[in-house]
Image (tube, helix red, strand yellow):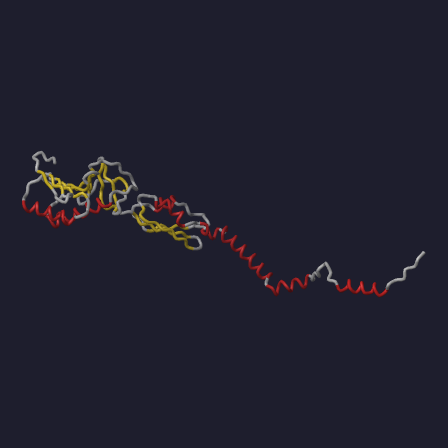
Length: 272
């Protein structure tokens, strides 16, 4: 049996070298150390603020204190506030989850509403401001009178005959008309202007102001004369020519002011 003497120096050197090597297992601080580090870094405070914010958000979204309880309607004269509230149900809805533009959209589709705005007031109020369409003229077609506002939008069939001083435009084309349809705005503006200018500047009181798809705006006099204006372009020139014809005493039953060179006819049967 052979004896191997121990190499003491090599063994001691190897032990020292192993002691100098970093350990594969990192040192783990104790819980007190970790708590102090968290306090100093602000992680605990941030976590607490986040938790409180989540609780506050949950309370604000689902608490009855922030659900709409009162709905106020302002600016209505013809419409009833109850009808508007029924059209956009708001009561009981969380005030934070209401999209104002989307909620008010059904009102803007109504022929009675020109503008509408919804305001939300914390904690539980909603305010609806309405601008109603105001009737400006009557549009008569097919024997039915329709209320029309200044922008040309048809509101509804007139609930009563027009008053004596109302402007009634007679549509001889008998085109179909329905609420919320927009009519020819140029024709409406020209008809309003003629209703004002003809009596005051020319002394001509129209017996009827009408509109035809092919002719445009025309006027009938008490003597069954028909004067065609068409559209509003060159209106000053048309009025000047009409004033000359009236002052000259030229007899006519039909006067067309639309062409550059207007022409007239005088038929005993009253037809052009």
